[in-house]
Image 1 (cartoon, rainbow, N blue to C red):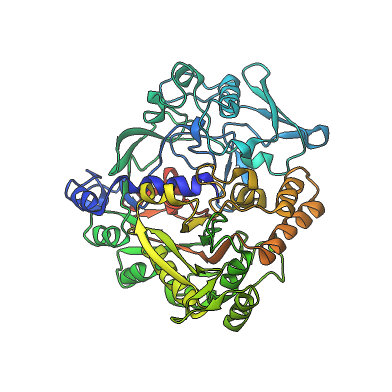
Image 2 (image 1 turned 45 degrees about the vertical axis):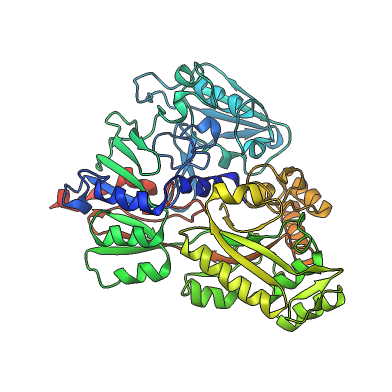
Length: 535
């Protein structure tokens, strides 16, 4: 799972449900259409809050940051298109050199022109070991970045990295501002300046992020002039505030989204995703560290019932980070629900049922805690269903809700109902999640998974641009996860958004786990057209 995936969720705990309910009374949108104001403003309810707004620390690395632009961007079909670059890169030297020609009509929101030196500064700073960027290894292939005049940037790679162009949707920071302060703690981390369609006007931690349209945006000033993201971690509170008119839109779990089906003033948007829910099975726990226990849990779980009952059909079973409908999915790695098989695995490994039905081996009782994020109904429901399935095999799982501040110190030994997933390339999905050297590195490899065959396959897939070799490498990873699962992958989840029917131009992309902040129908809010403006 990517650092973005978990860190975005971790920051959501900065506000409790009581604080968020109180925030509802303060009308975070001010002029939001949801509260009776003009349609040139919008307030959306999201679950997660960023830790930082600095691209140098990871914000905007996958595009859609609103405050910033990248050299490239994804369109609605997830096809790369030019942004700060005039055109797609020229690739030469066997895939080792990428040359970008830049636009000459772009300025940062403070009026200072954007040039190649800002691109060089951004990437060099990210690669600096002193910079606290948890996703630095995603740019491991980058050897150097150089400016040629003001309008050309040349990237040179250490090895041919097939998805490098997709990495250049990364938000670009202004050297003239960010270079003058501490990269990790300076004011730029909370008061950023960028080239994007919006300018941050206020960030009330734990409550909201407010943006105003950038009137001088190089791609045209947005028609939605005020845009607010209300940070509401609790699903029920988000739905209540949407129904009350406090919000114009919100991401909701299926059961709550269904409550708006008959509301003619709203539309529901469903986005296909790479977003999965998984249970980490730490190798440092006496129970989950046993490969037999992990294998047994992998087949004891009833994934299809989770899809049917918890997601109400808005998703599909997950057998790894790669969705089953992806071209990268290794056919034949699906695991059927097999409770008898799970019991047999445990019997053969010496885990024998005790007097109460819970298994014991060498005096160790087959029990462990499973943490989920408080207020996240989908995680809670997944955790409870997983624990129920496990108990039928003789494994006792004690589910507990908590904030990430409570959960994070326990991740080395306690299981966590986690989420992750990133579209585009299998390297994005798997490297940070499974590489053994990243065990214990923040929210990377939370299970401390250690499989030498997987490590080799991850490097093989990363270090070639030949499609056949890459498919072979990532198929190896998926097959190894069958033999030695470090996680129990449960479901891939479709994202559901309920939005006031006040604008035209809304759509969704294929989304990562990190939903709401940079995804959702507001991924292109700068292109929305108020319906009342067309009358």
